[in-house]
Image 1 (cartoon, rainbow, N blue to C red):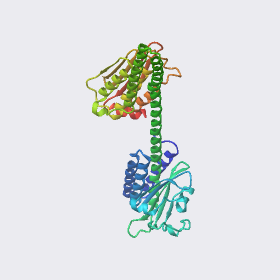
Image 2: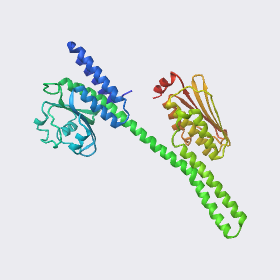
Image 3: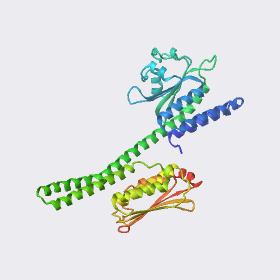
Image 4: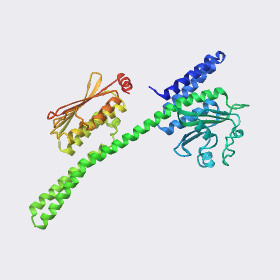
Length: 415
């Protein structure tokens, strides 16, 4: 649901288009057609998730909506230029010939400073224009520019140039209303794309931090022990204490093998395998076996012969939660054995990871261990996560995911 200033712009835009049709009954069909065109353009924009793709679709849609030869969208940076400047209607060769991106001067600077629409029959005749074009820049006469706003903040500007309708005297008031309406929706799409990209960046940082912790836990301590045993072996060899030196060398070889296995487990856990190729159950089984070998702890796996198709996101969430729960049991719980089960109960797929380790108080402030991350993964696909544990009583992590028609609905409700 859209809230705040962006929502105000959203609804005011739809009210404006409604009034355009209501107050001009003769042109009602034209108003409905425009509504359809704007709706299609909005849908095209909101399907995009990256900021760059959103900007490209915005300028392409704006050009079509108002019938312009050229459109562009500029996103200002912290200085006197643009962080992004996307153009439609020119080839890349034409853009390269023009030269560097424009700075925030002339009419572009006016739009950013004043934050209100500008519509001109002849851009070059306006004293605010600035009076020059780069040598390879096409001539522009008709001009229409509108801000892309989030409340009082101007996120960027959309401008269109050269109305292509034959014998046109320029952009009309209706063009301005349509482009302003579209800009209100573009602001929402642009804000959402930025939030999505930031969340992905945060996920990458969190994954790097997890990897650093895993490498430290899995390898650093082993390497320290390797050095200690190697030095002891060298000292004993110098004393001609062959049997003792041999024992130390054997310890070095054993620790090296353990470090290699743990490092292999960390590397294999960096990204989910191709779940579509091996299937969720088989992928989890392989990881459970590998992790158990790396830590020298028996891990059993029991999976249902047939599971319903849950979708890529749900499969990945179940795999990651299983991976994190195994990581906690093997690294932190002091478990003597771990059991992983994947089954179907009614209209739900259930994953359980159970260990006989030391357990913990689930309501304690220190009960981190990736539990919040696991709950978020489950909620993102409409599932639930429960954790049962107590000091000295082991731990059970249980994740359920709905299957069939319930899954998309519950995932949407979770958002």
